[in-house]
Length: 138
Image (cartoon, rainbow, N blue to C red; front, side, top):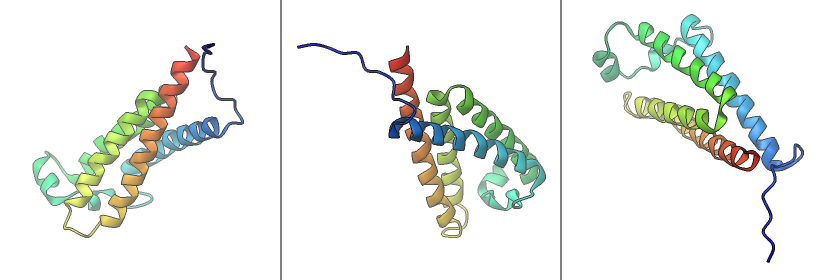
């Protein structure tokens, strides 16, 4: 029986296209949403911070959003540079957001939490595809 080395997916393959779509999305979205934490163009982000968390952290909710924005920007840049790692970081970050939303006056933000669970699954998929691409090309 002959053993063949797996080859990287071609650009036209579904797996490769999925990888690049997820990589682009999880690079651009965290950077844009991270920047918006500083300007509140799309939404007033501090309103989504659970009261128990606001009581726990030092400073104001807006000051916390500045930290959140920085983390999101760095996460997007990490996805761009190392999607096999950045995907896990973004998935973890989204999971923490889900916890925040699920504990904020339930069931006020359950719809947004459910969306973020789906996004976390997409980020995990990106990480797995990135690991596989890295394995077969090194």
